[in-house]
Length: 220
Ligand code: SF4
Image (cartoon, rainbow, N blue to C red; front, side, top):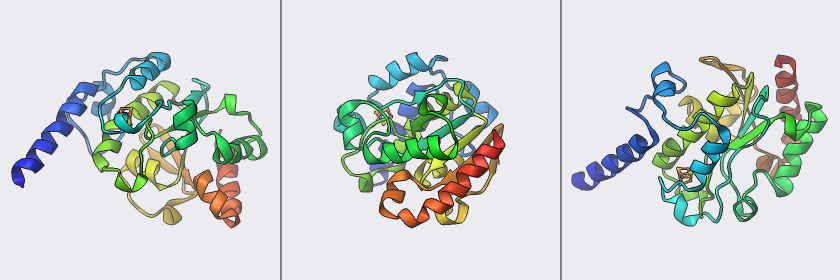
């Protein structure tokens, strides 16, 4: 059993090494982690690299990799958790009812268009089931996300739902507890709020998201 555990740990370390990590750091946005990533310093090339990525098991379940979209100079970056079925088929981010909800949040509350924002996910590939996701998958894929953040340099990062906030900050508090807080991590300001999918099922929470986005608007 211990041998199996060691083999899995070794696999994880090799995956991270392939992405350019010299070692992993529990503190995101640390100087060392950011500067040892050897991913391309160009969003288009980074997208191409993600499209042919096989660093985790989701490469077997995806149809198409779903990379971030929007302005590479955006002041605001939205980060969701993972592509859904429709996005997996189309290869585009935040489509369907969830995408409409996000577009409404951007246009009606922030009074901007989607083209002015950068929108991405923690995971670039669609999992067959979100219940079987291993933490190692999130830790592997977040190297792409960190690189997107490094290149776009948004003034405010809005995390949608618990997962992107947890893996960006290593703060695993419940979303209800941290939602709407203004959290400073290194050079970045993060405001966690609810995911559009959650709002579709729980429309009474729209008021809280409205308040969170007003806070975002005041900061940019
Ligand atoms: S989820 Fe991320 S790490 Fe895994 S195959 Fe897709 S792009 Fe690569």
